[in-house]
Length: 204
Ligand code: TYD
Image 1 (cartoon, helix red, strand yellow):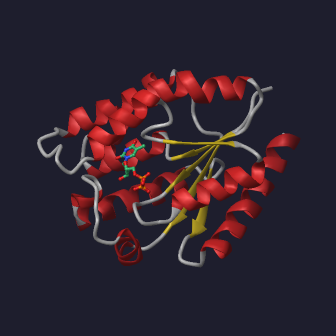
Image 2: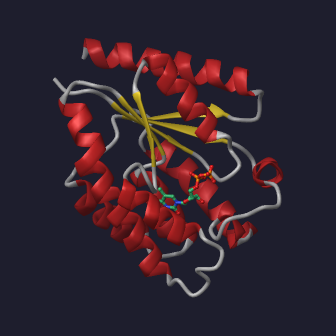
């Protein structure tokens, strides 16, 4: 027996960080995030998101995020799961497929393979997608944007449609939640649906 790894995904401005925290709190699970979750990961996150890292190439970005993920899995996620603790990660492998694979155009298969190398094969048991339309997400992002948030409307619509495609291709692992409501409304739906899936998992 190991704990469950539940990840929360969505475009910038979807409100997924708030939802990931509320879900972790409700489940009594460990909350963590990517890129980040470790000392090294947080340093890499700062470098990747800093708007002054203007010349960073797309491949370097993908590799830095993968390096942060490798450290995160080895130092935080796997040990927790092995101690039968549940983990909620605010973003994980599917962010790389959506943002670097589709958004940057590096190719979903290559990015998936690289990410699986980073996690040594570890994948999420359940993925919650906070689905919001582009105009609402852009509005919620506001004006003080990091390097990736600045990537432009086409980039962000590729990311959102990548998420929708991944979710519809693998409905067993994905839960899609309409993120347009209030924090409380969205959180209620997230918690209800995750509980249904966890009960189902326990029975299987
Ligand atoms: P995000 O999780 O949205 O944090 P905040 O809510 O503080 O803005 O920010 C992380 C950014 O990193 C986001 O723009 C998506 C990007 N990212 C990738 O491009 N690939 C990845 O694999 C991960 C984990 C994140």
